[in-house]
Image (cartoon, rainbow, N blue to C red; front, side, top):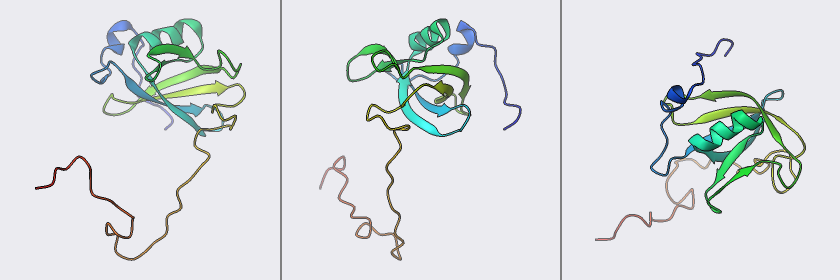
Length: 139
C-alpha cells in the first residue's frame, strides 16, 4: 500500500478508534524495515499517548494490569515509526524500529512457531482433532 489513507493524530481522532469494553485495542507490531510481524499486544488510549510522548512503544498488560514499555527491563526497545489502523478501526498496526529481540524468549519475533497444515480430505471435526465447544450447553 503506497499511499495509506491518513488521519491527523489528535485526541479527537484517537476517539474514533473502537476500543473494547475494557478500553483496549489489539496492536500488531511489525518491523518497519523487514515487515516481519514481531508480536501482538494491547494498547489503550493512555498507552498510545505515552508512546507518542516518549517515542517508545507503551502497552497495557492485561495480566499485570499496568503499563509497560517494551524494553524497559531488557533494553530491547521499540521505537514507533508509523501507526496504522484497520478498515474497522478496531486493530492497530504499529511499525517499529526494533532494538534486540521482540519476544521475551529472546527470539526475534514472538511468531517463531508454526502449525503444520496437513490436508486430510474432508475437513471434519475428527480430522482436526476437534472437541465439543465447551461454551455450548448439552441438552
